[in-house]
Image 1 (tube, chains in turn green, blue):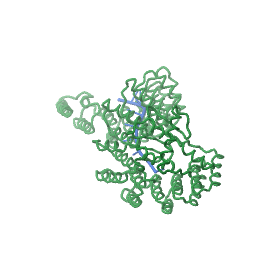
Image 2 (cartoon, chains in turn blue, brown):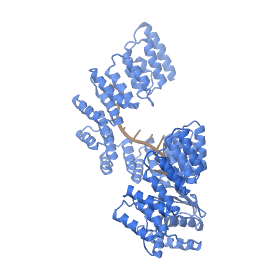
Image 3 (cartoon, rainbow, N blue to C red):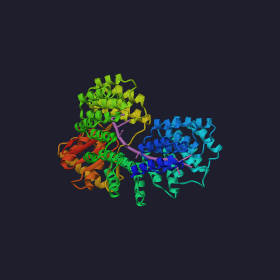
Image 4 (cartoon, chains in turn blue, purple):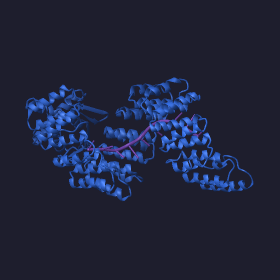
Length: 628
DNA sequence: AGGTGTGCAC
């Protein structure tokens, strides 16, 4: 159809050009709204070959079409531009736009200067394009100068330009300036202006202000909702983001791809399967197409919500995948300890012609470390550098140190750290510290622990780990000393919590008695205690740091948040249902042991996502093979 | 001829 039109255009132009000049816009009128690159090239070639009268004017249009391409052919654009001796402002504008959109923002800004040197007068379109370039280049100084030009030339009231200015100031973290632009013109604000301002407040973390603005916004379009939802999620207010999404659905607004991706991501971060499934079912009920970004986000979400099988089946069903999709799947398999599957997938990935990225190798190395595959880990690390030329980053060293440390190869971990050109991240030392705790290496642990506390004195985790090492060696005086240090320094203590979903969210902290079914929960804890004792369990109190009597220590670990959540889970779920818990910190050794036994004596499948990985408890065993 | 919004990590 389109080809016919173009052919028609060509023959028409041939006929006309032999007799009389054709009118200005005719060669381009036959192009569709977003023509393909080859269609644009055909039209361009024809304009030149036919020697159409006024063809210089068409070059601006050709550039305008090119600026709409998904990946802008900058070489082609500049060839067109530089063949013209006297480009018009229109042509300049579209070239500025091509450069801004095609990731050459500095060239775009430079072209604006050259437009002025030629004594051409920029118009309102010039500013929207060049301001976009400034936002992209974070060129705040140039942006401020342009703002003065805008005012001088009398474009200060233009809605599009003001929105571009708001966007510029907010991407350069000048929220106060964008607020000023926003407030200057109360009368002529449109939805887009509100949206830009909303985005600015979000980026600045001023959620309350943004919320008020959102409330005042009478006509909310899809992007207003998108901005608000994304803002919640970006600022870690995941549950509010999902509530906002639900409200949008209630009002009958059809979400777009970006919104779906954002709320799937929020569900993944929360780790709550119910929320993720709700979003997935919304997509299905709207018959919304599963694009690559949505499919990828869903795979990631199911993996992070503990349903790795569902991730795998979605992955296999996806007709088209990009390297992100593969990376998500490899990382997902790795986080669940399915090392062999992750490594097999890596082989398929490369044999299908994809090029692995630094992220791919984080997944691969993570798979090796989770499964204790030391030899494979060493090989992949070498392959990454030698074959793919990827320089190891902190995260790759993190995986390797973890790999060695878990196997007790502390010396090899130290050797690797010594080869690093950049100073090691405290996370690497923290990984080693964890290994010292597992292997009972009190002296090494003490050295690393003190070093870490020196490096990062506000992080309470380091004190807790070091105290844990002392506690395991029953060095109670040292435990007390470290704990006292932690209290004196008033560290940012992160409270442990566990979440479980059952007709809404239930969050527990240790010793919690706030829940409405608290007395039932504690009764269930008693029952659990009796039944696991019958099965031969005896408490391991080393994780308890308090210098208190043994009996009290036992009581303290009995009420860890994950146990309260599991007791509640047993109370409210059906026997065949899997109990899913999300915990912010790492699970303690004793709770891990308890949950293993619970899974056996109560015949329940329990999945715990802790701060670092997944634990699938079934028949008295855990998928981590007691290695975390 | 113009402005706003999405995915992978120790």
